Amino acid sequence: DVKVTQSSRYLVKRTGEKVFLECVQDMDHENMFWYRQDPGLGLRLIYFSYDVKMKEKGDIPEGYSVSREKKERFSLILESASTNQTSMYLCASKSGGSLGTQYFGPGTRLLVL
Amino acid sequence: EDKVVQSPLSLVVHEGDTVTLNCSYEVTNFRSLLWYKQEKKAPTFLFMLTSSGIEKKSGRLSSILDKKELFSILNITATQTGDSAVYLCAVRVINTGTASKLTFGTGTRLQVTL
Image (cartoon, rainbow over all chains, first blue to last red; front, side):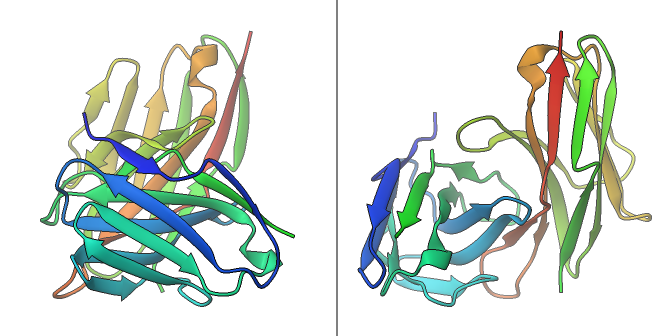
């Protein structure tokens, strides 16, 4: 079974803090993704990575950066958290190739005060 | 801009009813369409559709894709309370030279009552 884990289920941070969200997958997948999910807006892609040290902007990258130093780990970084980044953050991974399913982690609910 | 639209936004049915959820899309470089079920946690995969007219079936759930009219439907027959969830439709597009990406609809919230 594919397992995607995220470092925290719930996180509360203050405006201006630097926030790290970690995601780890155990299936040797090449591709990893970060989404945020907000009511009425659905899932929106922030960044994705198709290989170690490779990254590409998704639909809403502003205010975020990512790091992929090892194949199994994909980190999402909020350099200076703002209240409009309060959201549910979902990580996913997928094997290479154009087909294949994305497997999601359990999500991190982030509240920025 | 790639767009995926789901309807209805929300639906309440009685146990035993049959429901049809809709997903239409406007994207460039279409590759496949996926359906997910999301309860309290992360989405779980239901179906992936790549070809028109071929029905995918899993128990009481089935789905079909129409690439000419750019839509897909997800059918659930004999609904049960355990079917209550948000159903997400996503379309995979190919970005030249990089990983494919998914564009999601906002989801249909289904509630099945006794």
